Amino acid sequence: MFKVHCGACDTEARIGDMRCRSCNGILRFSYPDWNVESSVHSDRGVARYRTRIPLRDEESNHVISLGEGGTPLLKSSRYTPDVYFKLEFMNPTGSHKDRQLAIAVDHARSLGHDTVAVVSAGSTGLSCAAYCAKAGLKCVIFMSKGAPKERVYPAFQYGADIVEVDESVDDILDEVDRLCGLTGIYHASTASKYNPYQSEGPKTIAYEICSQLGSAPSHVVVPVGGGGTIAALGRGFRELRDHEIIDVVPKLVGCVPSHLNSLLVAFDEGVNLYDDMTGWKQSGPETDVQTKLSHLRPPDAQDALTEVRDSGGWFVETSDDFALDHQRALAMSEGLYVEPSSAVVAKGIESVQAQAREGVHVGATVALLSGSGFRETSTSMSYRPSSRRQIGLLGLGPFFDGLS
Image (tube, rainbow, N blue to C red; front, side, top):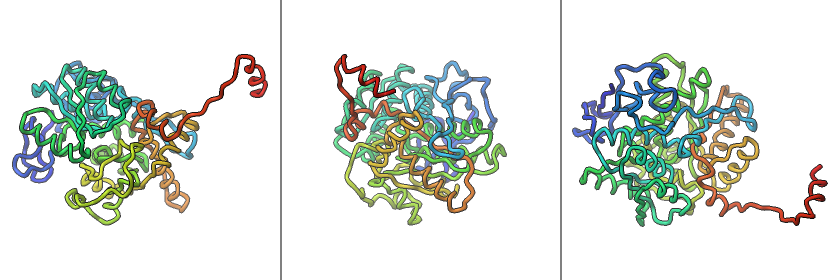
């Protein structure tokens, strides 16, 4: 069984707490029965690592699961040598967020909640809707006004109540969290300060990478929005190192949008605290190309900056054009169709390989492909329309002659 305590003052917390009652600090977890693997409980899914994540139910058949986790690690054809892709878009709803929401919804149900609220631009909301449907809970998704209907529709099919708010995601997050605290509604948004339980989910990606490779990679490239995923990966690798399963934590390379690059600026300027970022402004026009990474003030910025710095890693920024171009490049060269917000890892891979050309030792590099392109096809099409040929039936013969 896990224990909950404050990461700032170390005060012990209760299972239902979301923040420290003494200092309002972010909660952390310890696992007295920490084992390398608990596959006896489940052959797949985050429950496989139940001794290292905050799942409440003792029996694996009671855990809320759609088969998340256990995603493939595929060696690259385009990038050589030793570059691998972790295919997180092969989770049940098409993104790595399923790992977080499996834990959050399990927690909500174990506490007796019947309604779960979440703020999301896409992936988190869809995942929350799916896991709430599985658990028999009501899901309410709050999002900024104007989200594409194609992105919202799958969550509607899961039965979620969808609410548009005419404000930025960061401002909606704070207000929804305040109201959830007042009303007792369970808040499952994927940031540690709102829900520390879900933040343990992405650690399992680090566990799987090392298991699949047989060792730790030298670099891990991650698309970064709110910062929670790259922070959790750092914690996961540190746990493996501290238990002497791997020798060293991989260097973490975060990829952020060039128009929402506050993490890169904070990293370069030595900023550590989230509060120091509150006066920053967006550095370019708002778009929906890298929408899954769109945070002016990433809620997990402090943890993300700490983990990247401690690993010896860095941040890179990507333009929308780069994301769209490499979405197609990955599809054509690797057979992997991912959303533009995942295709940004190409910039991180290039920056790692540039160091290798300068004589820096680089071992295996793993890039996280966090979201499926099929969920963002309408957005990609609006920027990069497809082309097709039109011929009559009698024209098929000459066309085939031209192919041979």
